[in-house]
Length: 115
Image (tube, rainbow, N blue to C red; front, side):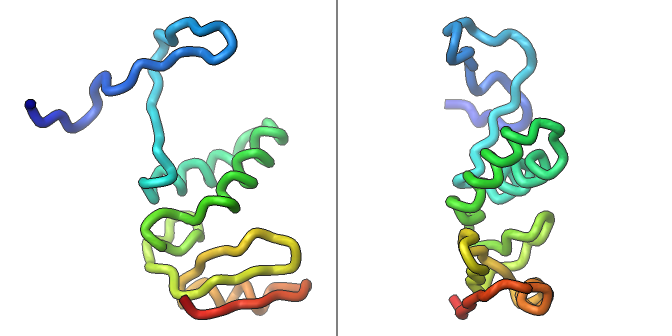
């Protein structure tokens, strides 16, 4: 088997409702195993005009910690060393740099613990 890296036709995508193959350019992300894909979904959720899609993506991200035990702050590549749970929100994995600002800014009850 030859090594294939870079941008190439690795996946074939079908539309769920029509079962027709999508012929437009598609780029498949695997956020459960790729921390950059996870960040990309978070960025998309925060910038899309589709409120329902944004809510769905943020809910999914909250239920799936950033892979590799990295800090969940967008663009942060630090290893998470804290888990922060703010009243009724999903727990967030944060690094030393980001735990303080979140705790200080919280106006709701929270718990946090070292990983």
